[in-house]
Length: 164
Image (cartoon, rainbow, N blue to C red; front, side, top):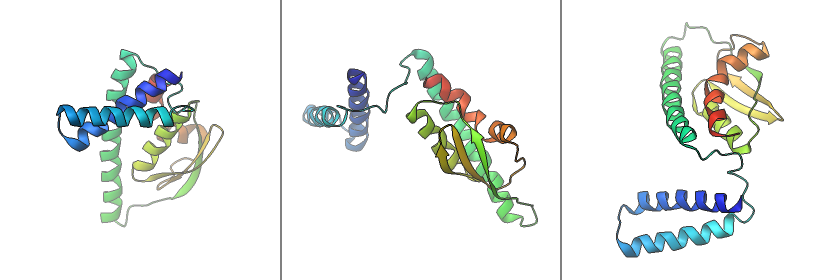
């Protein structure tokens, strides 16, 4: 498990290094590789963040799918909130609902809660075990299963194919 975490951390850090430097010069690549290796060794000795991550072609495919789904939901929710701001006569019914998640991995839960928070109109307020407390701009249902279906399922179904 530590080797997997080290390699993933190293790859992510090297990609960030390449994006920041924007060059493939050998001295810069070596500096980035050495820095990424040292940081990965130090930080991933007890690293559990990648626990549950599936390293399969299907998981890579679903990561790409997830990015498109998230982008679609982001645009859709931005337009909905903008419409509510520009048309104050539209009713809003803000409130906090509790929804269930079946995701077990801490990283999968973090991705889910951040995705919910980043889409306008929803905000993850708290997490207790497998329950998320979400502030929703227009609570259309206080039923846990219905709220879970409307808020969580669109993200959770894809995230579960990337993480255990």
